[in-house]
Image (cartoon, rainbow, N blue to C red; front, side, top):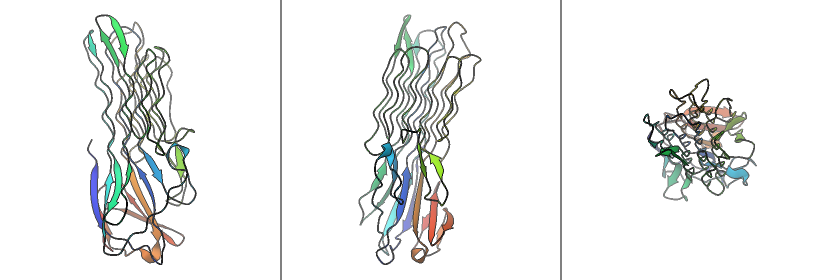
Length: 302
């Protein structure tokens, strides 16, 4: 899934007032697997990178709040909202390779008078490979948050500093590693829109039998028996997709992995600085502030 870009006219920061932002990239896709009779589980996708400058809230990897931006009147800024990564595909022959999930795409704010704010797409989950009756897992990919590792002890991918955590490793063939989340509690909450919303959850790893969930927008891992496919990361929360799962001795059909969820960019500014001329954004107010939520294309002209 491709990211979406938009351009909008400069927002004045008022009398020195800052513009707070929440920038979340697309989550990584969960890993696929080979369909053979040999309990194999793939890793979940990592959450999209998470950067936050609102109030005193945490930014990614439970790091400190970033500094709000000051926009200049007449300057054009570009917002990019990243899409979720695709899931790995299952290989339907006995000897082949399940494929890793792909990374999500970046989200960003850029303009001629600011340093670009970029959140990196979440890492894809590791897959399970089978070659000539030998089992090989794949490690998760690095990203905003790292993807989880495929079974047989493969490690998760690395997260990006101040954006997300490392993906989990797969300990045995019982479950794939879960994708890294934006924060240690499974994700992070932000009230930039006026109410607390959980976002930035990593996708859960595939499993043999037990289902698992994530309240922060990460997808549920696939279950091998009874077969239940993984679920995708929640759109506009940057959640990672769940990894595929398989039960030993059951054979096809197996539980496929799922795609990551798209990201989001949210701007919060004093209402006195907001012109009211825009298209494509969801516009709300909270006290003396106006909030622009970008789930897709649009524009703002100051």
